[in-house]
Length: 124
Image (cartoon, rainbow, N blue to C red; front, side):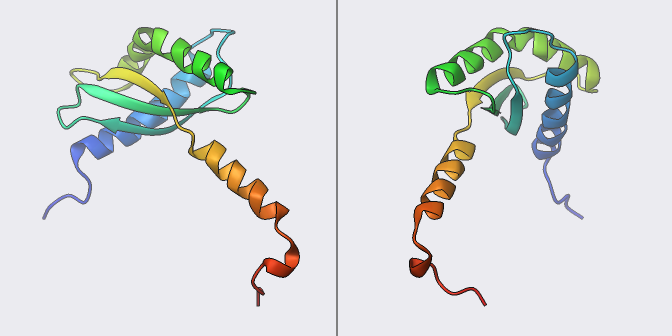
């Protein structure tokens, strides 16, 4: 019987949990804002990890870019803490990227709130 999820899917799911824990508990950099880990994409050989994050307390694009740059600078330290928590022979190389889906969702929500009630379909 084939497994429902591949190994890289299972490892990426666990890595997402461990990254969230490490950023919350182990990384004590005051420059780092409130970061959420939205997704982790691993290559098939688990050598590289694309980590998509959202910075919730950043006010503008410049601040978001600074936070992602800081995460990429701290990647070796973060990787070390994650490696201690996961039972893998080799840990992936981390690359952080900003995920703008949250911002897009907020913009769509704001636009929908601006629509007049008469143009909305009846909810029954």
